[in-house]
Amino acid sequence: MKRLFILFGITLIAACGGNDSDDFVDTAYIYARGINAMVDSPTQTFSIGPRLFISDLPFGNISPFSGFASFDTVARIQGRLPDLDRFDIDRIEGLIFQTGFEYTFVSTGYVDAPDSFVISKRQVRRPFTEIYLQFAHAAALQDELEFYLTAPDADLGNATPYATLDRTQYTASATIAEGEYQIRILRVSDGELIFDSGLLQFFRDPNAPDDRGGRDWLFCILDTAPSLQWPIQALLTDGATVFTLAGSGDSSSLRTRHVSRTLGNADVLIDGDAGNPLATNLAYLESSAHRALIPDEYLVSATSPGQPASVLFEQTVPTNPGVEKALYLIDSEGAPGGIIQDEDRRSVITEGRLGIILTAPENRVVSVYVGYPEDVDVPNGDYGGLLINRTVPPRVFSRLARLPGSTLVTVTEWLNTEDEDATNDREEVALGPVDIQLDEGDVRTLLLVPAEAGSGDLVEAVVLDDL
Image (cartoon, rainbow, N blue to C red; front, top):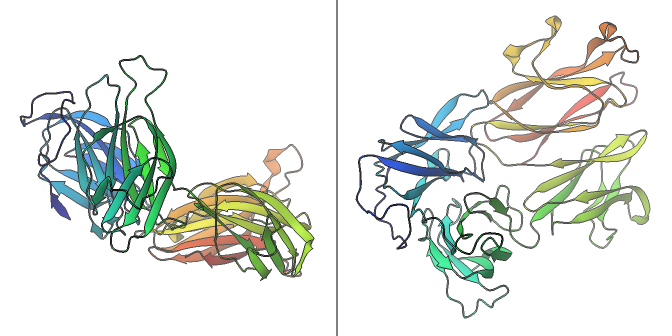
C-alpha cells in the first residue's frame, strides 16, 4: 500500500535543533528510527531508498536512531517470513527530509491493512538541560483518546487533557518540569480509562554537568497482544533507553495446565486462597482461565478437590508486567512437578506459531527436531532442523514461527550414553515425525508427555490450541 507524507506541515518547538535553517534541501542528513506497532506482524525491516536502516524489528520494539545522508523520498516496510524471505507490507512516498530533524517511522494497522505514519521533530540542540516529552498514538484497535499528564494520583474530575489524539496522530515535543508524573489515557467515545502508567519519574541525569543532562522522551502507545488488564501498552524512550510500560495494577496473568497422568483431578490455589481458586477439579489436559495479577511472586498449589489442606504439589511462580505465564503440572520422578512457560500468544497473520513443552521421557537423553516435510527423511536419518541436542526433560521452548501447512516434530533418544565412549552412542526415533497442521494466525502448543502405561511408547504428543 502506498502513502504520501510531506513532512513540513508539523508544529515544531522553537530554539532547538542542529540547524537553524527551515529551508528544504535535495539531500538531508537523516536521523531515523522505527517502531513495529503492527499487532499481527512478524519482524520488520525498514529502508529508505536502497538504504536498509532497521533489520528484523520485533513487534512492540523501537530501534535506535540511524544517521545517514539520503536523496530518496520513499520508505519501505517489509516483513520476514519463517523461511527468511521478505515481503512488502507498506510504502511511504513523497518524503521530504529537513536537516536537523529526527524521523520516527511507525508501522501500525494490520499486515493486510497497514496504516503507517511518520513522527517528525526537530532534533534538540546538544547539550541541553530540559525534559522534553512527545506523545504518539499507534494503537490500531483504539480510536480517539485523551492523554492526561498529571501529578501522581491527581483527580481527573476537573483535569484538562494534555492532548487528544486519534490513530496515527502525535503531539509536538514540548518541555515539561522535572518531577513525578502519572499518565492516564481515556477513550473519548465512552470515557473509559484504558491505561494507567502508575508513577513515572522525569528527571535530568543527576550525574551530568550543570549545562547538560536533559532527556528527550517519546511516549508511544500500541495495542497489547493479548490484552491483560489494559488494551494498550506504551513504549517510553529517550533514544538511549527503552521502557515497555504494561501499566499499573493487574498487568500480568497466570493460568495452569494439567498434563500430569499421576496427579489426578486437582484444585489449583494461588497463595492458598481456597475462596478464589485458579481452577477447581482440573482434569488431565484441561487448562484454567487466565487470572490477571499484580506482578509479583505467588505460591501456586495443587490440592485434592475440595480439600485445600491436602497439598499435592506447590511451586513459587514469578510474574512479570505485560507477560502471560502458564504453570504446567507435570509428572516428575514419580510425583507431580511443574514447569513455567511464557505464553506469548500473539497471532501473526503470515505464519503459524508453535510452542513445545517437553516433559518426557524422564531421565533419558533426547534430541528434538522440527522440520518441513521436504526436509525430513527418517529412514536416512534426516529429521529436520535440530531444536535441541542431547537434553534431559523437562524443557520448555519458546514459540517457533512456522510457514502455514505441515510442520514435522521428531523426538529421538540417545542410547549407550552411560559410558565415556561417544563413538558407540546411538540415536533412535522415540516419537514421530508428528505432523502438526498450522494455518496463518494459528498459535498452538505441542505437549510431549509420558505415554499411557502399558502402551510401550516412551512419549506421546498432544497438540493444544492457545487462542
